[in-house]
Each structure stands twice: as structure tokens, then as C-alpha cells.
Image: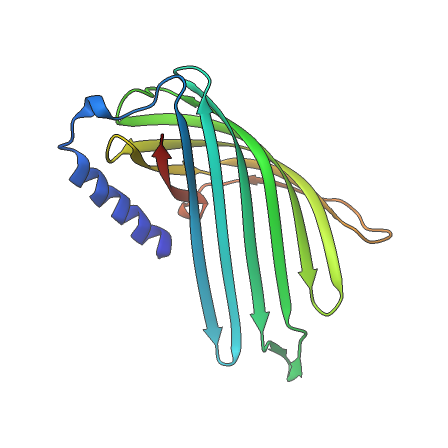
Length: 200
């Protein structure tokens, strides 16, 4: 529901901005931009409470008219309190995940208000699970995703990326732990990420 509302907001913004001068928007070689998204979700079932917070900032540079390269970071915090199973209280849990990586994009029509792009990104991730005894899990992820950007003004744009293809591997930092490998193909709206872009 949250993503559907964000999608509707983005479409409404596109329509509002359609009357602006197209020559003032778009990207070109040498442009620098920052982008990112943030989200918060809270659930409660009886006395069981859970919440998730995430933020994903990025900075990019147009090395040519069509190609942008950049760095990205991310932080996600998940917590669950007061959980019970068969009348037994479970340990409250908190998972904090940090991510740092790089990305490259190819824009089809960068000088226009609207452009389609393809992105390749890779990142190192580290998660710390606190359930009374801390466990750290380190990993690596690489993904390919298509996306679109639309300029609302000469400096601000909205972008939407679809996390279509991703491979990730991770391993807990404990003796005898095995690698967990995950391959994912995203085919639904849950894999769409919306963000705001500011061009310098």
C-alpha cells in the first residue's frame, strides 16, 4: 500500500510538472547529483511490535553525456519486541545492516526531462543481529536494475528503479558457519524503489 501511494504521488507530480520548460531539465557530462530514499514501517499485533527504518543516500557524477558513476550507502534497522510463541516469551531482536558500494548507470536520453536508465551496482554489507548475543554477518551483493527519471524542475527529479536481478552471498562470523547464497528476480511492485534526485 505504501509503495502504491508513493507511485500515485509520483504520477501526480509528473502531471503537475509537465508544463515546465523542457530545456531547463536533464543531465549532461560533468553534472553531479545526490539522490536517495528513506522509509519507516511499524506493525503491531496484540502486544507484538515490530518496526523497520531504512535510508539509502547516493552521489553520482556524469562521466559522459550518457554514463553516470557513483557511490552509495545504506542503513536499515529492524526490531521486534514482546514476541511470544506457544505462550513462551521469545528474545527481543534487533538487526542493524550497513551497506557501502558503487554503481554505474547508462541513460538513454539524459538531456530530456524523462529518461530510461539501466544500473549495475555492487555493495559490501554487514549485519549485526542482537538477540542477547551479538552475531555479525558480512556479505557482498551485485544487481542489475532498470529505472526511469523525471525532472520536476531544472534541479529536482523523481526516479523509480526496479530491482529486477540480484545475487547476494553472506556468512555469519561464527565458527563452522556456511555461506548463504541468494539469487533473486524481482517481478512485482515490492521491488520498485522511489527516490528524489537533486542535480547541482
